[in-house]
Length: 509
Picture 1 (cartoon, one colour):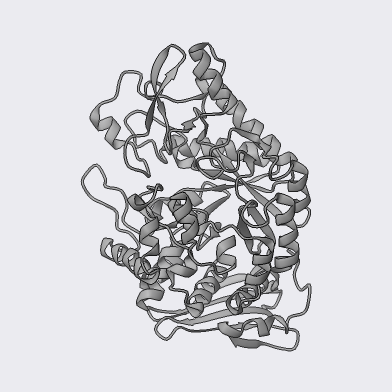
Picture 2: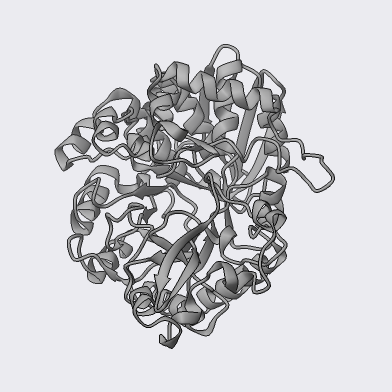
């Protein structure tokens, strides 16, 4: 992966088509980014789960464009694409054939049911042990051929889980990898991979066999020139362990920890995480999902009745959630949990900028820390434009996540790019993407509960410098950079002044 900022974007919501999104990337973001994660553009991109329920995972939705449009973007930016490994749409050709023909369908082994995993039946203990990020059990009764079956549906009744260990399941996944590699994609994000392997008597989530599956799919991807990013929300110790076995893992603990630190002025929990977190991480503050809290909170209850401590205590997590609701003036409460049709148990729905109460300084501090910690930073398109909560879209759809999925017209993007906070954020992104210090060594310098200094030094003699200093109590923050005419320093609110001092083309993407 290019060691630069990568944008996360729905092409239908920022540009309208893949081609128009590519034009906006080049004209509006330029060398501030080195890559782009194009959220699902498969057929259909606007299903029950915003594209994460593909009917045909190997076809670009013609309303958005073609594979050639993806290749055109990949000539300027590294492209990340979602690979939905856990499930497929109930409207897919494969599952429709199973519904019509039952066990006579060649695709019958491709889909999981209750009896597939529990051939001898399931006890109450078996069923309650299954981990699911939403209320209720992961099964939907369906008429399959002449039989009525309980099909395994982890997320919605229209997303049927795949038996990834079956022959047709394996062939299906390899077909997707071939299509993505042929289109110039650089990295695949394994969506919901933690749920992909089911075994009777387990949680059916991130069990040992899941890691074996990830190894197999990573090997197949690497053979095709693709890197792999694993998407798993879980206890922070699980993330550290997962990172040792994959190419890239998300740092999902960073977003809630930064909010907690900015809300309280206490950086203790964040400091601990910075000392133990994996460095092969994609850092995010916002994504197409909500703001996760499970990654910083306590772990799942163990069989012995104990629960692993989190980076934050249960009380701190509760206070964090309530503070987000307060700073958004109740908007996030309307979009979270049972208040909206999105019932994920581990997230609050809000834009990150709104979660900070629209505080420009706090927002720039959060982004600066994201860019300075080791890893490759990704910035969600709404976050890149410091967007607020879209209450009109939420009211129109009733889908909680839509509060953070605004539909920008090209003119609206150009207008937002002129806002002062967005200009400074773009300067931060350009520094992170082009300054040679970030190809060097990272140091966590003076750090305690109240202040922190993060530094990068690159070059043969350490001549390339990038340093971030933050005081959590006063919210004073500044960046110091090496430049052509000597070191330069500026507060975050005026970091764009530093960009003008940097030589053009100091580092390629």
